[in-house]
Length: 105
Image 1 (tube, rainbow, N blue to C red):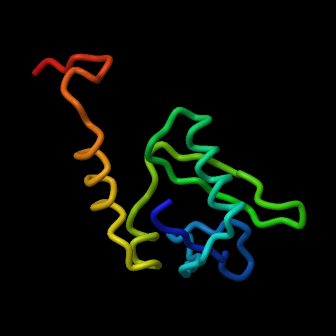
Image 2: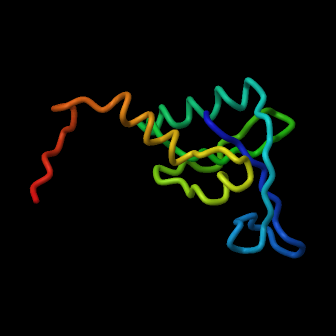
């Protein structure tokens, strides 16, 4: 987990999407939220993911796991270069011959 934010829907709207007028702010995850996010991504077979979590009285609840998460909102809200972190992860973990598919150009 490299960054986390809390989104708030605008008045009269139930969706908190930033492009729908919602707002976002940096948030510190609890250890349980961090573990839940990591497990959700792993369960989906993803090394990089955006995990939407709802804070509830019963602990964190996974709402959605995105294989192609939006970066602009979380980078702006947290000040973290998430795209840069993804590139660093790929450079560190990508190995020749490790892909299942061959790209032909």
